[in-house]
Length: 167
Image (cartoon, rainbow, N blue to C red; front, side, top):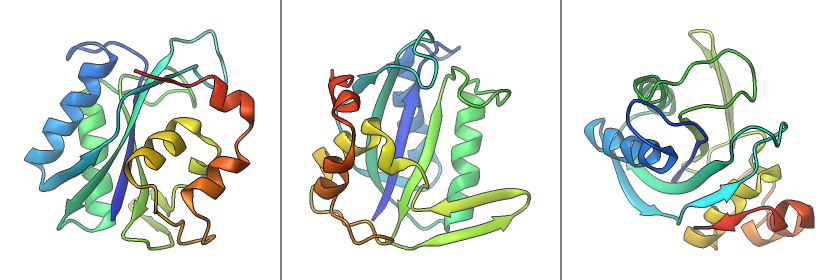
């Protein structure tokens, strides 16, 4: 199972935050990535600067014949097409797509100046990944820790869970 997370907190030449993510879904299909299941959209405050525009987030389960690095290249290309620029960490962005899990592998590899860590190293602290993931894959187990998604959710701060809203 391959799990991707999507986020947007800026309009782009494509449209609003939700349209940016829907654009990403369409682009994935054009690039040998089939969407199996999508979560609802969720809205969260920006991190770490809550004064930045709120994010729309979602999670999807996908299938592809691409390896993890080719998939990463596709995701980066889609982000760029949606107007994503990478200047300052945590800056507002038109589109962000992360690989959360890739066929239950545990990987940390560097190739072509890109580092890929799977499972995504910060997903456990992100309510905007955990809640949508629990919605579409309630039985998923983190291959690195062997924790269930409900166990991971129970570790989240209650204040984080209070700040997310299903749309």
